[in-house]
Amino acid sequence: MLKKTLFPLLCLSLFISCAKENPQISAGCELMPNGTYLIKWETFPHIDGTVQIYESNRPDSFNLDIPVSEQNIREGYKRVLAMHTFARTYFKLVFNKKYSVITANRELNMQGIFNFRDLGGYNNNANKQIQWGKLYRSGSLSMATQADIALLNKLGIETIIDLRTEKESFFSPNKFKAPQVYNLPLRGNPHNLFFDEILSQKMKREDILAYDQDLFSFLLENNTDYFIKLFDILLEEKNYPAVIYCSLGKDRTAIASALILAALNVNEDIILDDYLLSNNLINFHSLVQNADVYPMEVQETITALFRAHKETINYSLDLIKDNFGSVDNYFEKELNLTHKKREKLKSLLLYP
Image 1 (tube, helix red, strand yellow):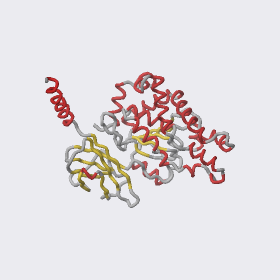
Image 2: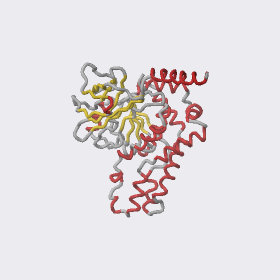
Image 3: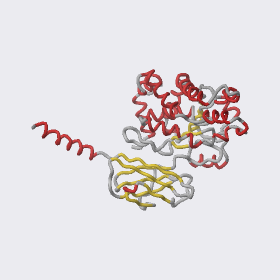
Image 4: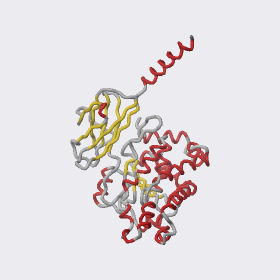
């Protein structure tokens, strides 16, 4: 009888405790071809009421006097025409004048730079959101046009972290000049090393995944010194906003970005989704001149070489766990990224 009485009371107590916590809110934003923004949101648990949408050219400053739009929370989305023309537009969603979240278009349209995107907006396991406009990842900046450079200046980029080799940097110098430039030439075989094997069809499409996994394990095992320097740079407030890049932004930049997200306690599924975004932002056909002249099998192998494969990033995270017991141990023992340092990193990159 006592158990029958205590169980519902316990459930009621847990329900009341959970109800007092803020709901989990996720939001996304996509710039549509007609110039409007498609803003989507989800709340858990579901909440009824109204969401008010505000816009700004800065992710840390919004005028909350007049919203640009309102919507019933249950609708889950709203198409919004921005009221102003900014270099970049951020939206603040306020739910029932109580809970809020900031969102923006993750991918920035560049003329010569590809795979340029914001690492902001992701929620970590404690439901804390990464700040927008603080940390970007990209492909090579060596093809930046004047319009690209103007946009980078408007974004206020303070720091460039170049992960390319000295040879790559020499033959394809960065065209954008930031106040701080750090060269961390990660050790690892470039893609063009295997072109002869691909063209001779000694290396086939089914070989690419093994190559990718070997590359990522090599990057992790042979660049500890550079990863330590990377986090040292990111632990300095004066270095933000920053952009991390390599040639394509999908391998060296990907492993660096995955480590940063993991250090912020972002879920592995989100890390995977961010990694796979490169497939939407790299024009594979344009990377190889006269690709059409090659046999179809060769074309497919080259395309596979330049794609991001989910098995690769999963393999890398599993490799860390196998070698160190956990990702947390890896940060602590291998990268000297202590709990105190990670808390500082979170204070710099997460919204309060």
